[in-house]
Image (cartoon, rainbow, N blue to C red; front, side, top):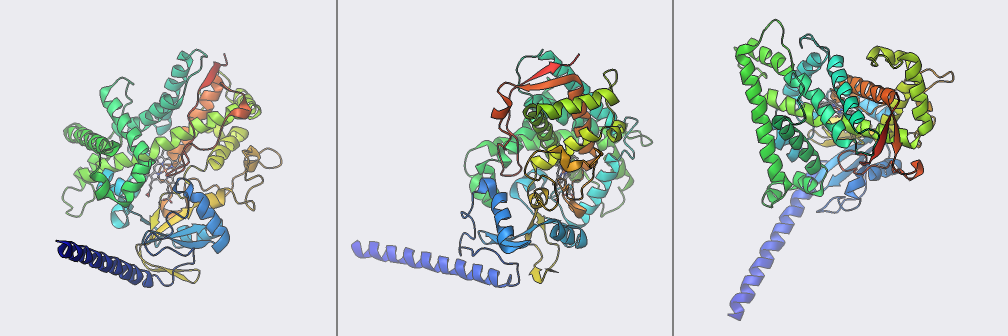
Length: 499
Ligand code: HEM
């Protein structure tokens, strides 16, 4: 028996040793095909550079590496190389100068699980180009009914002001109300109408978007992105999320199918109708990208990329206004002088509100919502700065490095609207304002986001003064979560009516 047991143990040990050797050999083989990659810290043969930094604040480690190795650095996440690009010039040279080569999107299992390789955010090549072109055009109001995007945003801002009024000056947390309002803007664009908060369909949609972000920024989500099959075997929030995602996709598909017969081709009223019209136009094209799969995934992309981003930014804006009461007062004074109290602010007012405009830009710069944008992927082997970055390699555009570069900003480390003002108080544009990314993959919703931030921020400050429940110096403006984006903390506040 003992001999048998010893033999068995030996066989297991030998098999294990052979497996490790094969793995190491494969990794070496893989690494040797990446010989001209940019420099970086020495990787561990199995884990790469994982565990050499805090995954929750990875971007800080990337900033450190760019100081040590320069504007192009390679790190290894297990056996996968990732190239980090930092600094304004290097990002301009790559994202804009070599835009086509750097235009791929890295594939994350959680993103794939929600879009199945369709849509705009997680696709590359022909499909991405077609979906991006169509979505950009439609969002610019070509063929989306009689109501402008600004009107849809204003409707929601007005509703939000009414909700805040109902709090009657007592302490409340604005997070959910903001999230609902910004989701309703996307609903209005996509489905043609807003929803009442109690609507079960809206509730289910909100829950899905919310759980998506919770899972995406949790350790569970990050492990899922590395070992999807393994994590699928364990219980957890992700299973509910996948069910909810399926339901959301089905709902969107039903809405599109219902419009197939009722649509007025001369005047599509919302994003779904514009897409369905294109589907009809292209029905005889066997290679068309206009199908239900792409429609449903683009809609999901808009919800996932266009709700948490904007609602977190406005939440952060109010937090900063409570912390810097003097800045809040100056914004209100400017709004009072230019807009007054008898009408709602409109985008046209922006040019006459330079201080307010500078404050909104500074909120976004200081917030640094997406430190590494959304990871890219190389479309082909590309030479840059004497190195070769092979096709398929993941690329992190380190936007943070530009937003805090002391050579590009007057006061990079503090919240200071002077960063966007000239000597006589006029708004001053700065090319280093890269919060929406750079080049071909830059944020597709930038124009919409700018309208939302301006209309919501000015409407709220026109109607309320925001005060904290603690002394301003105790307010914590550092982010709650830095894993996928720098998400601000939630808080309670007073919204004191101004009239
Ligand atoms: C404060 C608000 C927002 C910020 C800071 C922001 C930022 C970004 C960033 C940094 C990227 C990645 C750029 C890159 O890959 O290099 C991105 C992509 C994207 N954003 Fe936004 N975004 C915001 C709001 C929105 C809104 C309202 C929408 C709604 C339509 C939206 C839709 C998208 C989409 C679809 C992409 C993927 C584009 C592509 O892959 O071609 N975003 N955004």
